[in-house]
Length: 112
Image (tube, rainbow, N blue to C red; front, side, top):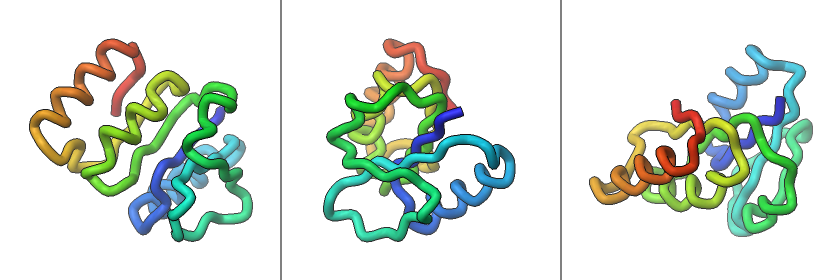
């Protein structure tokens, strides 16, 4: 199983820790913006978010970025994942929520 994280701040770190306990044999990845300063465990493969199209598909993406970045994070990964989890609150605005719903429905990815 290939699991991708976007956002490894405190919430992302907590979700990563939970995933590692449940699925310790999975391959873990983190796609990040160049200006990101959060620490990434050495066991996690890191690549720039703009290079996601060069990666094999992921089984699951955890979006743990700040709420106002959830929509853009989903747009970046929607064609490269089978399922996505978006940390709450899901959207920053009602229009973002509508667009997230549209992307999930159009792409056919599973949404948690």
